[in-house]
Structure formats: C-alpha cells, structure tokens
Image 1 (cartoon, one colour):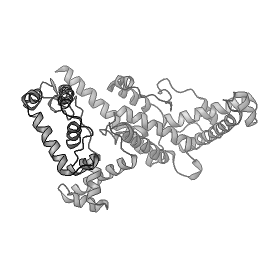
Image 2 (cartoon, rainbow, N blue to C red):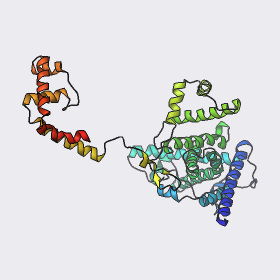
Image 3 (cartoon, rainbow, N blue to C red):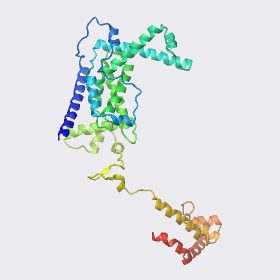
Image 4 (tube, rainbow, N blue to C red):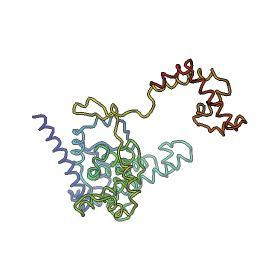
Length: 388
C-alpha cells in the first residue's frame, strides 16, 4: 500500500512538473518574457561567454542515437529530473533573443563557408584554412566561432520548455514522452539555425512550427510497424480532430457521411484512410487473465505445415511411380489433362492439337489410362493419401 501511494505521488509530481513547463512556455509564447532584467551595463558577450549553471542540462546534440537499449533505460525519474533542470534556466528577454540570433546567423555563415571550402579542396579543412578563407586571424576567428556556438546552445536551452509544452500534446500516439521531447529538441535546434530575427516575429513563434513538424514526422516514421507517408498521417490527424469537433457539435458520434462531408472527401477515401490507420496487433500479445498464452497460439496458419509439405512430396513421388507403369503417351496425356506439370488443366481439344490427333482419340487414351490406374496393384499405393 505504501509503495502504491509513493508511486502515485511520484506520478502526480511528474504531471505537475509537465504542467508547469507547459504553462511557463505558453506565457513566454504569448507575452513579453517576464524575467528578471539583466544589468543594463552587462556586455553582450558576457551573455554568451558565461558558463552554463551546473544544473543546466547538457547540450542536446543533433546527432542522437535511438538505440533500443537507451530508450528502455529512460524512467520517470529521469524525466522528472530533466523537467526540474530546464525549469531552472532563465527565459530570454527580447533584446537577448535578437543578439543571440545575430550570433547564430554569423555562425551559419561561417559553416556555409566551411562547406564550400570542403567541396573545393576535397577534404575537411583545418581551422587555419577555414580562418584564411574567411579572412580573419586564427585567434579572432576561433573566438567568433566560439561565440556563435555558445549563442546557439543558449538559444536552444532557453526554449526547451517550449518543446515540453508541445510534446505533451502528442502523448499516447505511439512514441514515449521522452522520445517526443528528443524529437522536438531536434526541431528546436533546426529552428535556431534557420531563425531570421529581422522578420519581426519572436523565436518561440517560429520554433513552434519546427518543433511540431519534427514531432509529427517522428510519429509518422517511428510509431508504427508499417510506416505511413507523412501526408497520410496528417490526414488521419485531421480526421480525428474533425470527428471530435462533430461529436461535440452533434452530441453524438458522427456518421461516416458527416465526417466525409466536413472533410470534403469521398466516403471511399475516408474508409481507406481509416483502414490504413489501424495498428497491427503483435502475435505475441498476451491472452487471458494469467497471460500465459499468446494471440498467435489461437490463429491457424494460412500456409502449409511441415507435415503437409512432406505428405505432398511423398504423394508426388508415388504418383510418378504409378504413372511410370503406363505407356509414354498415356502418361503424357494424364499429365496435360490434370495439370501435373504446370498446374493448368488442358482440354481434350488442346491436347489433341499437341499430339495431332482428334479430341475423341485423346478421350479414349485418357479413359484407358484411368482404367489401368484403378487396378488394385496401382491404386493401393495412392489410397492412403485419399483417406488422409
């Protein structure tokens, strides 16, 4: 009982932390960031050069691995710790956001130069070659590079709460919460790289689109055993949303016709998409209260069993032995008539054309061959297969 209460309390605490991150991220996305103003005489570079606080989470790398072993190691405790850590990171003021964006844009320009240089020389350039291409002394170039990387890191870390806020809306769709956060963080990194502060909108507004796109694409790619195209997954999401809206409007479950009309699509297309959305069930799914059986135990196999394959092989061998007791023409006629070679049964007329005889003559040969096969010495070999 004590353990059950403890687990429930931990779960409630985790849910509370998620709600707090979502609430704070929402505030930062709709109003000016209400944080403690920094001293007015603080130098801009101090913002970038300051070491991250000890409790700040480690930098999220774009090149993450998704090994199953690491996914399994995630626990609610690690999520709770992560939420606590990002909750301690101060949100950015508008002027800080602009300054960081400028540094990141400068970093992007340096990286473009590096990519072009690498294509020119055919190998990865050294810092000296890179600095020379930019036209700066090596110490000044390295400092410029460092400031850009720190700016990108700070922009990402200061907006991780936005990732949590958005990831929460996509829970229970096939990916774990920690995977949703990870994928959303990759979208946040991409947003930091692409953000143009001169267009006048806030970074959080711009980043929301990239985070949402990264999460939805990950769900489409990774949440299903059978992968669906992204556009089809997005249509499935719109159908679910439309169904929910119609249910509220009509105070009942909407019909297929009503959903199709609202979605402006045919009922056939709606049914096809709905069928595509169904998730496959594992044959290893436990069955029964004791869960000592598996679903696959109760499903009859469609293919041949090993016993059937052996029986068929033996039948073919015995059938060949019996046919070998007939004349060559009788044997060939029966093989063609009953499709023993290619599985296709030929008519008397077709066989007659092959042997250049009449249809009636082929019928006579067939009848004579069958009479021979009915002889006890021959049919006793095949009776066992007929009984089984």
